[in-house]
Image (cartoon, rainbow, N blue to C red; front, side, top):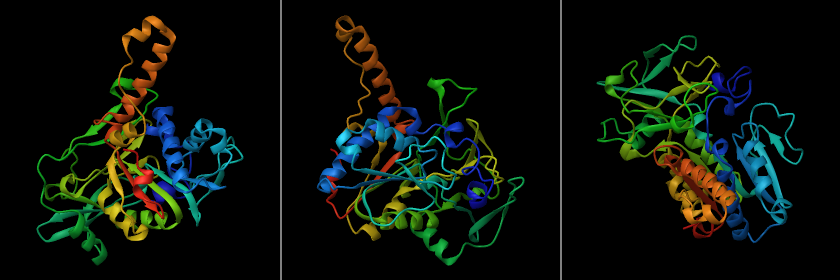
Length: 359
């Protein structure tokens, strides 16, 4: 998975970038960036308005989010922002010069660290539960064919015991990925839901799990790079009490779900065990954290998917249409069956949680 995504010809380091293959909140609406500007303003106030305010976007794609933040922030705030894009692909030729581009997370961040749909692409091993216990699945990188392999390492086994119960849980939540396609479904049907238990494969009858040790370590390292401020992860994920029976590993290419063959031709992704990630970050930050749905987070930051009053159409038809478009975009971002079902993990470092979480 590491080589398929981040090797010399990997999916994320070659080609047009993620936006050509799937739809995220960043690409769905400028309202997402507007809410993150409000989040940044809260972090800035909690830090006492420092002369330099770091904004570090991990898994920056082609820099779309940082561009939008700089365009929407107030001039006084923009003048103090030091934007940093962390991405393993080459720097886009049209990226504004004020955005730093680097392959690793800088140390000593004072400000906001963002990870929007980054952790789902941190590589994972997949395990299947058999009568003899957990076994790692081995994958042919050319065909995607799976075979049952050896037991997981002691570290991975400890993680599975703590975070992924092998017994199926009742009524699990569907797992959701938004995507965009040049051809295919229109905007109203631009949501792909993989029902739990739909995916088969080697040993599927015993249940599958994506081992989250690497993601926990990656997030803990990211939080450790923040000197003061807020680390924010936004991703589609699940919690211990509702792990999906057959896991969530899948592939995407050109706006279509495809088999997760790790040959570099497609995105290979799996939903995130967000409670485990949060626990790993908490051990580093040593501070309370917030874990809520994107719907709850964005509504608290001002995103309102409600329709404008019809009376506005009579007084100001153009204004009504603008308000309707804004409401429609907010509704997409907060739809609990789509992007609104993503989880927001906010882990403050050196500042109070209440100061950086809108209620």
